[in-house]
Image (cartoon, rainbow, N blue to C red; front, side):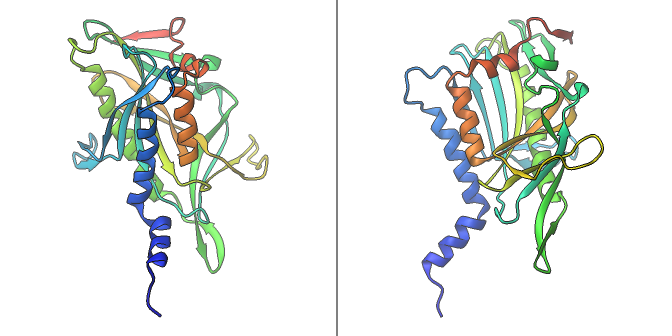
Length: 280
């Protein structure tokens, strides 16, 4: 029996990595052109499929997407997104295993640049941080596979490649922000948000208690955080504390919240007035 176009289309929709990547890009582009006059933030500087040099291996690599979410017209407060895309079959999902975030993990850092391009690092911690204590935080990843008609773990190597690329891409974004042309971009703040985007219905979490017992039934989610504590090899001491895993729906919801001016979240990220600064 000859193959039909509809059969080919079904396989491509399920398994084509580039198609998933383009659907993620569609979400990012939609936020670029808000229809409401009340939108208080915007996505800009969208870059798709560029290359960079990996600071660890020295090899040339390609990123999926980079962009900036700015809360104000002047570009004073910026979320810098390094987005990688991983196409998964929802029947063989990604499972993020973790526990409640402890006090040591409950922080993030913000890059502050003044008019003279002097760089300082602000540490936002505890309940002031986007990553509050006692919230769920991922600590390990499992990719599901079928073996002998049973669902089992296939490790995390494929996912690790993607989130390591997101971290490496974030390093470039940090460097570019710190070295922006002082005549066009002066004072400003930047928060780095590396992300890995998977298809809808393919992201699950499993939460453990301190005794190693699973607390609740595994749960399907659209967004979750994963603790990485990654020190970036740039000219100033900066730590990326978390990476974000999201489905396409989760990405869309998150971008809508930030673009619509969810000031609670913006304040969580940039509540640096009373925080500790580390001069460079």
